[in-house]
Image 1 (tube, rainbow, N blue to C red):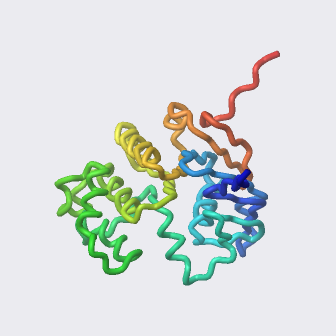
Image 2: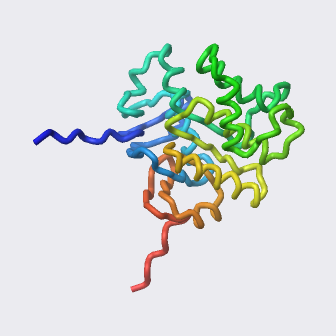
Length: 241
């Protein structure tokens, strides 16, 4: 019989500890495995360590101790010149969109391709494809200040998708949006996940987490205190005996 090859998780953290030079400990002994095509909510109070975890995954920060692997690659051993190849695998959106105000919608999305791919022959069709995915056909020549908050976040999502990432990190992507627009963005993230991309979303939005019933990883004081499938924002109450 042929040997069965073990499945390598897309993201793996083993005993990750992060302490900043000022002595602040952001993460303590964090171990987490995320398989391909998972959809994970990272929840917890402000300062719990969610954003630090996200920054470690894109190697914006380095671990103090422990190991992080992405597609089997040890990020602590990753040379600086290889960082662009890592980040090409990861799409990232934030609460504040981070669009370039003097560029059009098309230019904002195309800019990400130029940064990661250099001169690319198929630039225009690829940008048009992702703008179609996020529902922004016909908005290519608009500037960010001509768009609603939800539309700006869709541009940010298109920019993150344009290089076909395997991992999509969303750090409070609905934090500046009204409830109806927030749900539109969540539906878009579900579509992205259904297309095969692994999604990790850090959020304080309790309603969305409770309704979605996806995997929930709760972080408090830099530690994972709960990891459950089909979870809610808060831990389930203990049943009375």
